[in-house]
Length: 185
Image 1 (cartoon, one colour):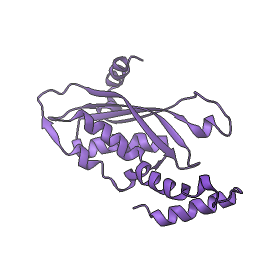
Image 2 (cartoon, one colour; image 1 turned 90 degrees about the horizontal axis):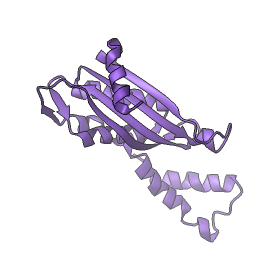
Image 3 (cartoon, rainbow, N blue to C red; image 1 turned 180 degrees about the vertical axis):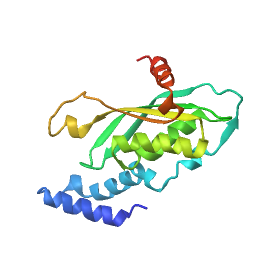
């Protein structure tokens, strides 16, 4: 749970630390605004992805299901700067599927935490395997990191791509090839 008061105190200290006057008109309400924003963008800290993935529907098909281009926004735990992009999820059902919006909600749960992209990708795949118990899952995340864009090396537009394979996707390369064809890559 986010401690609103502590966040406000920290923001005031930060503003003072960079030489700002915390009592000037434009900054008076900033600590409160930041605390409320953090409640929203870090709301995934308290959420359980299983809540979204446990509601399944019985199917006879075991054909690949793909949800692509799921937009997400997250925060790098190293620099506390945003990274954002698209997640693509595939799974092979083993008698049950989940509503497509639940896949996007699962991405959102993990993205709304301090993160590493590599960790985010694996957490999504692991949650699918744990709660849906498919034959396999594959998650690909493509993101731009503000720590690469606005500081350090300053390379806007560069993309980091991560992939997590679980189950049959680890042992059958033709499934991964089909995934990439279906993504149009």
